[in-house]
Image 1 (cartoon, rainbow, N blue to C red):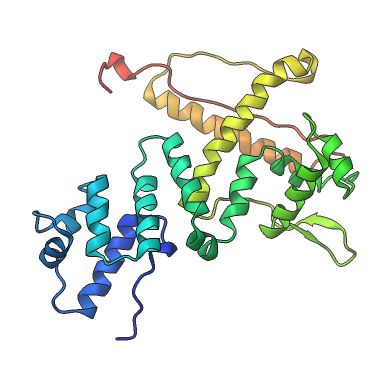
Image 2 (tube, rainbow, N blue to C red):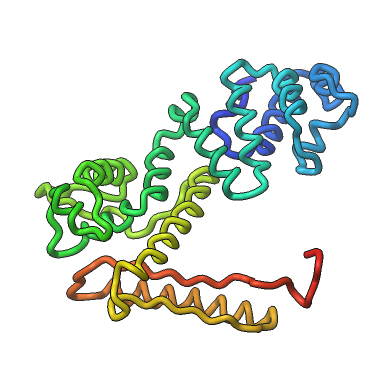
Length: 282
């Protein structure tokens, strides 16, 4: 058999890992089955592996230990699998982010996913994205001290220097043939589920800065407004589409700006403030 056993460090979904590992083990050994796994792992249910693989059952702490035993994980694999289960079964974004950070601290994960560390910083530190945009400005100076003073609120020169380094590692910035720093990719998307988790953190940080801008800037230098509306589900979806179209139009207009002079952040929020149709248990 030439196929290699799936490596848990390559996955961001433990159920996908179990599914592919099960297929491998079935081919690798005629003795392997759901019942065999349950016996080795110490489960009374003969099809627990199938139920977990298909998302019909979650794993408890004790269940994770038994799975590590049944799958014959070594210490590093068992540790990673445990964190991965916590990541996938997290009940909210805060739990998910904590698990994601634990995954990134794992030595094996760093080896298999070297760019996720930079992704984490890209979405965690608010100034990474503005710096990337600042590079495209005609007046940009590749000087950490200058960059730090351009941002509002200001950051340190060391923070600016580290941001430039990480943005280059991510392939979002590069030096051209003359040595000038330029943007190398027009769009940014998180590469995997772990990276995507940090987007929520970025939105929280931007909302914090938006709140602070009320006191930092005069009213003619900002626009903070909102509307509370009563809508049907059909009109909610229409409003959502309008918001998305406005965002796309905004990007199109600013991308063709012949004389950009400053970096701005615009946030549009649309979310429910009540349950649908007076439901009490939704």
